[in-house]
Image 1 (cartoon, rainbow over the protein chains, first blue to last red):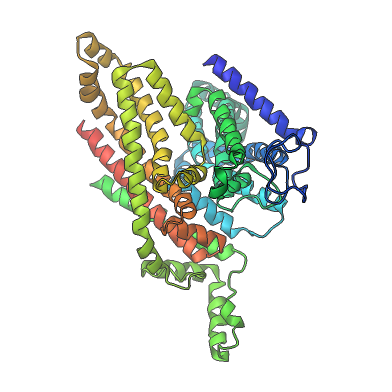
Image 2 (tube, rainbow over the protein chains, first blue to last red):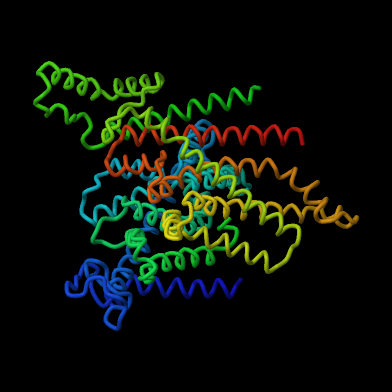
Length: 267
Length: 285
């Protein structure tokens, strides 16, 4: 398992570096059109061919990967911070605040995730610039994805509140926010980090689902989800198998995340 | 009995809260209070005035909430802006298709997931364990929408994709639960006394872990409902998922919010029932 984890980490690093420095590795910009070569097969010039608009698929894959690999962790940060605020604080304070927060958490957890996502996405403007649509999509993921993490953090904060060292700090006169920030929060750091890593592949998959349904990042900006829309041309799939490249990259990235994460965090 | 009433109260409170959230979504959405009919020259001045008054009364958020919840309690879920038909009628037509997809997905996922977990626990054959773990891992990494595309491409019924979304969750959870149960001291003692693995599994492990597995059943219903959106949208199946997707693309918020509310009610019923049964089971055990 150790070797598998090391291999997955190496693959993940390779993909991250390639996508984050897409300008260095991509032969063309993500919106650059080769109008003389639309929908061509892979060749020395175009590694994965071009799409119907004559854009280099390989370049779009790298830029799309970059969008997902930068914004999914950003959404994860938002969701973990929200979870820490709602779950962590309520678990630490306890009483009616904890009960109310947990009721809200239960409500969010009982709403089917994809229904909630498309409902909120539909409320936001759909005809926006690609950059705005990108920010909206990932912000929604971050803002709506806090509930499961909040439950974990509330439980951790509740345990910490009853722990010996917190009782000792209280006995020494430390109270309220100071106690929370100095004693409780640093001890929640490993859980916060674990939840952050767990959320990244979840958000990458959620964006892919939204993208395939046409509710993700707008064209011409590529994202892993948006690139998967090429798969909807069923008749072309058997003659142009390279259209599967975004799906393969997505599965490799998410699998690598799953393998890199320790088993207890995955569970 | 007290617990049942508490669960019912919790269910109503959660649904009301979800209703308020839904109403807020409709209320804050851009374009609220504007009706295309107000631009229609065929409407008389009096009709247009009535439309304006209606919009004005709804601009007070509390009046709007009262109207929304009142209509909801009377079974009036509004009219679809795109399809120009009552939402209740649309749901009546489409719900059976989605429920069928959910039932197929949940039952199939449980059959496959629990079946593999039981075989794994009975035979403890390392290659089989690796195979099942890798298989479930692969399906955890594929977005449901992409899975549906692959099913449609292969010409298979798209609703079976839901089975492959439910199965990994069931397999991983139940295999983990059963594996841990085998390490308990009383199980080790039973094994040491000569009880076979199958006897131990079916008599001493499955019954005690049943409440936890039942709790997971509620979660898988919610998962299957979510999966219904891409299944119906991509495979062009006329269910509630497709309706929600069309409503999202056309910003038909009355439909979208009410569909979400309905699906929430279904998942809440499934979750609450699963928890209740698991509570009763645990108490009897």
